[in-house]
Length: 314
Image (cartoon, rainbow, N blue to C red):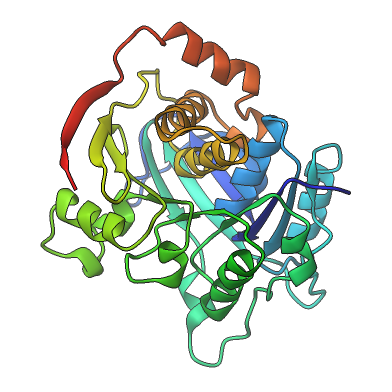
């Protein structure tokens, strides 16, 4: 199977529980309105969205096991997502998380921290050189230590532009990226304690030639490059049903934009439109945005001002 995009990162099974009424309260019963077991993770969700946008993808990273592998194979069997590089461990059920959702409130649970405990068995793979040679562009999650670094180094070696997420300003992954999408989770981490968003932005753009985008949920995002003026863009206004997968969908939109040679303003707006459609529905894997839907949203709002202006020079 030929592919346009190679993705290395988190691929897992997500158990989601949509509650009928309010969020969980201690010692109180909550009725489940709907429950699902679907592909998730930053790479898994982005791959689902890219396939819906008409992009062919090959994914690698997290090992899959006895529970996650059948889920992925069934879900992606008629989609343009190549699973052949994922390592199957028959002694492992696969990485899964659990998300409880009520309105716009959600609480994810999992065992991610245990993956990095001393003595823990490594549950992710080194990238295959031939996979990166065969792609047009790539996307890399920052979670897998030397395997992540190796993926980025191979992309640099073979001149493959890549999108990453939440990569710190002093990391190899950030310094060589084409696009780095940085979320509130990253900007509010201890690394950037006591720094303003503008100060974090300046650190990020100073250490890469790539495009830096800082998102902040429903608030304005800022973006730009070294030596350029910082720009601000408002997210699209939609009726929000669930924010689960919003960031992963934004990442997918950036990958699509990079693949198709979009200019920065167009890329950010396209990614924002993808994310807006994603949060207007649930569950996302069963209802990913299509290219027709994204283009329709962009067309319907093209005469509205989504950028609130230039903020200043870097």
